[in-house]
Length: 82
Image (cartoon, rainbow, N blue to C red):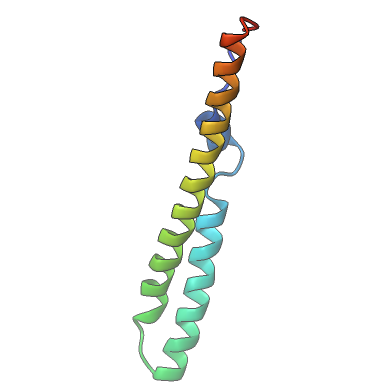
């Protein structure tokens, strides 16, 4: 059996939680605005903004994690441990 890379680990460990949470929060805020302003477009628009913002956060976390893993792998290769 092979070892999973960071992308595979994130795929099976609930990745997307931040984006989903931000989308739900945006939808809730949008629903509030819709009820106050008597419109019906804010919920989906703000949910989209929330999801995009959450995805950016997740992508940043993933990039930092990948950089750290790559640095550790390089160090092990340099030390001829792996």
